Structure formats: C-alpha cells, structure tokens
Length: 483
Ligand SMILES: Nc1ncnc2c1ncn2[C@@H]1O[C@H](COP(=O)(O)OP(=O)(O)OP(=O)(O)O)[C@@H](O)[C@H]1O
Ligand SMILES: [Mg+2]
Image (cartoon, rainbow, N blue to C red; front, side, top):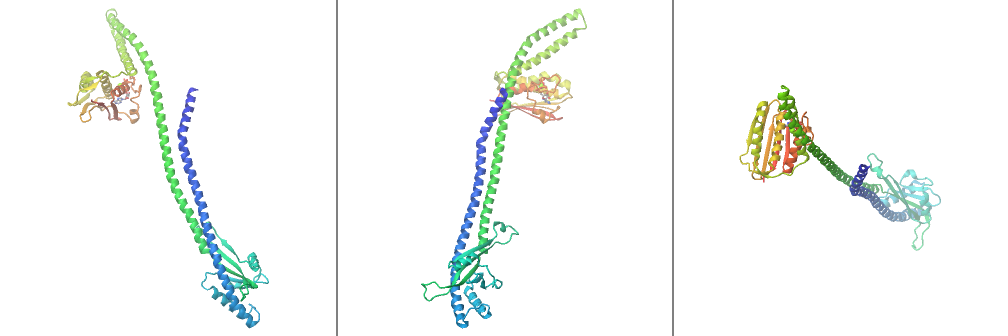
C-alpha cells in the first residue's frame, strides 16, 4: 500500500518534470502549423490581388481599344458603306472584307485575340475575326444585353488552378471578354449616338494568369520547404531532448535503486553484526573445550584425537567467517598512521611463501624503492591486500605466476598497488559482480572478501579496478592518494 503510494508520487513527479517540455513541444508544433496556414492564406491573398490588378488593367485597356475600334469601324466602314451602297449588308463579301480590314488594322499589334460584333436587333454575330462564329445566335449572353443597354462590361473565362501546374496537367487558360456598345458617332459629342450593335474584344490572359498561379505555387512550395526543414530540425531537437530526459529518468531510477540497496544492506549489516557477535563467544568456548577434549581423548581413547581436531579446525574456519561478517558489517573508520605498503606486501608474501611453493606458483615482486610511508590504517590495508592475494592463489590451483608491484608517482603523489595472476580469469559479466557482497562461486567462500576490500579502499579515498580475461588471468589495481 505504502509502496504503491510512493510509486504514484514518483509518477506524479516525473509527469511534473515532463510537463514544461511537452508544452514546448506542443507550442512548437502548433506554431509551425499556424505559420503554414498563414503562408497559405498569404499566398492566396497575394495571388488574388495580383489577378485583380491584372484584370482591372486589362479591362481598362480593352475599353480603350474597343472605343477606338468602334470609332474606326464607324468612320471607316459604316459611313463609307452606307454612302456607297445605301445599306450595310455583311453578307456581301466586299463589305465583309472591308470591315475585316478596318478591324484588323485598328487592332494590329494590340494584344487582342479576337473581335466580334453583335447585331443590335437580335443576339446574332454579324462579324467575327473567328470566321466560324459568324451567324451564330444567342452567344452574347448577359454581357451583350448590358452593353446594348449602354453599359460597358466584361467577363473572365478561366480554366485551371494550382493543380494544373503539376507535371502532366492541362495548361491554365484565361480570357477576358469586354463588351461595349457600338454607337453611331455624332459630330456633337454632347449627345450619345444610337447603339448599332455590340463590340466584344477578347484578350488572352493565360500567360499572365499562369505566371501569377506559378508565383502562388512557388510561395507555397518555398514555405513548405522551409517548414519541412524546420520540422526536421525540431524533430531532431525533440528526439534529443527525449533521449536526455529518458537518460535522466534512468539515472534517477538507478540512483534510487542504489539507495534502496544500500539501505537494505545497512539493515542486513546490523543484523549480521549482532548475530556474528552472539556467535563469536560460544564459538570460542566450543573451540577451547574441543582443545581440552582432544588432550583427554589422547589418554582415554587413543586414536580418536582427530575427532576433536576436526572440531577445532572447523570452529577456526567458522571464526574466520564470523570475523569476515563483522568486518563487512561494521566498516571501521581507518585508524591512520604512516605505513609502508611495501612492508605490508612483504609480510603477507613471506607468510604465504610455503603455500605458493606447494601450489607451484612463481612469485615476481617489483616493489618501488621510492615508495614513501603513506597515511593508512595498517590493519585494514593488510586485510585488503591479503584478500586479493588469497583470491589470486585460489584462482591458480594448478600453479602459475603471481606478480606484485608497487609504484609511486611523485608528481601527483599517488601510490599504485598491482596484483596480477595467471589464474582462471573472469568474464566481463562476472567482473561486474565481484565487489557485491555475498557474490561467490566458491564452495567455502562467503563472497565478502572483495566487498570488504572495496570498503577499505573507499574509506582511504582510493579506487580499485579489475582487469581480467577468462582463462588468462586477472589484475587488480588499487590507487591510493599518497599524501
Ligand atoms: N584473482 C581472481 N581470479 C579469478 N576470479 C576471482 C579472482 N578474485 C576474485 N574472483 C572471483 O570473485 C569472486 C568473489 O571474490 P570474493 O573474494 O569477494 O569472495 P570469495 O573469494 O568467493 O569468498 P571469500 O573471499 O569470502 O572467501 C570469487 O568467488 C571469484 O569467483
Ligand atoms: Mg576471496
């Protein structure tokens, strides 16, 4: 229950720390979306405005051209024809040819695609530059009627949009048809002349409209390109930030786990310490009693003394284990005094020499002559070195080479202790566990040896590292501050 509550609190804390980042993410993405929408609207406004200006200009131009045309047709065709033939009959080829010449001369070089003249009495095409349209009825539409009523007006006929810019799309077309009344010109300009018909002037705006649409397309395309680049960059930043946050969360979880682990170990340590302490005294009594028993057995039941010896031996071993437990469970503050690490090694090696010989282990020592006396707890450091050397000897059951080296770096004031063996070696996975309490692969081991070594080295503000290869050997390196 308490556990669950804590988890919920942790989750809440995680969420709270992630929240500002999520907000940044949200704002960045929505900012980009708004910017994209804004560019789309802007490109639409720009192109629409450009189209509007184009139409207004073209329409104004068409009105001028149509006015001029109307004047020319009246002066150069209507008047002379009426004078000459008495009536206008475009069916007659010579009349038609004359009108055609007048119209073509009047619109020559003026960006006009076609000119059409409608009759005034009915909606029928009397003249057109496009021969096939002549004689057609009802093509004038509403614009024709407006012009007949005296109103200049125009209409745009367009086809195509942005999609037509895609490869394979049909070209964009746009035509502006301007209609003006075709009047009889009066000498007296005050009065408006009679409307004789309607003139339609058609301009081809396809190229201009296509250019404007292309501009719109390129605005959209460029902004999309910029947007995509921004998205990619943002994506990278967000992914990186995600990774950093994840790594931090992971680190926090690891630290919390470590904390829990050390809390558990501390409790365990206290328990072990009190149990070991309680065992130590009875153990001493058992051992001395077995000693006395052994002596008595010699006279009472000769030949059975070894039974008492077994008890003495095993209680001795038990005593060792209990001591290890106590050492581990009650890490002591080092009681420092100036000590020679070379002497520590020499003493241990002298003590181990018979065993090394028995196991066929060759010893190589290289103890630095420059090694000064260092402020250490001699007892603890002796224990640490002994544990490492015992492990090395145990790893070389079939013999091998044990080398012990000490170095002193005067410039930085650092003492280095190196113990190497050519024993079993360890896998990288195993190397990761050996300093953990109770990790052992030995039948009679407690797995506390290296955990104690680590405690001792830590308490001296030093470091211990292991370098090992399975089947080749192991090197332990202890680095101690030498000042
Ligand atoms: N020099 C070495 N070569 C190969 N393996 C080693 C060496 N030193 C330590 N180990 C491995 O690390 C394990 C842990 O060592 P540690 O000294 O902590 O415990 P132990 O030796 O098993 O038991 P204890 O030291 O309490 O009797 C050992 O069981 C062994 O597998
Ligand atoms: Mg050991």
